[in-house]
Image (cartoon, rainbow, N blue to C red):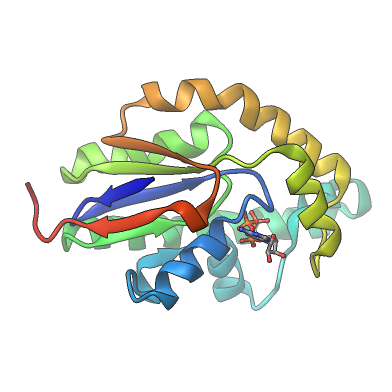
Length: 191
Ligand code: ATP
């Protein structure tokens, strides 16, 4: 598969945990095709504003501790505000930005279509389309497993959303099932 990325704009990664979003981006860095500074992730911004490493089960904290959950919500809000300001600044400067998060729900993605329109830059989606068995197998081997229940839940949402993504208004939507069979190139200028 051949992926052609725009010169500037937003590249939205989409896929459940373990679909390999971060690994794929790291491969592109290693090949010299993208720069580390071109990648933005909400997890990284949470750490940046709070010093705290959150893992995927943070959403369950509401059952464990109300105050911890409230902390997480406040930190997430600050992290997102900073992250979105950074993405918008990069759009204004005509840069390409890869946003690394699951983006499983329509509202998670809609925001970026709005940024694209506002700043007159294209938005492209790279959908990591990996089957549930592989996701679960990878989870077992992972340092911080997300857990079977969570992965299955994410996969159900992903399966449902897959058919709608193409119609949401992206310049291109690429479904990637094997990153090793994927060639990436970048346009040298705006069209
Ligand atoms: P999350 O949304 O939870 O951050 P992710 O989609 O970014 O997940 P990665 O962090 O890239 O996924 O990878 C999760 C695990 O799956 C890691 O242990 C990684 O080594 C493994 N993995 C990712 N891609 C592949 C692949 N193509 N082949 C084999 N293992 C992979």
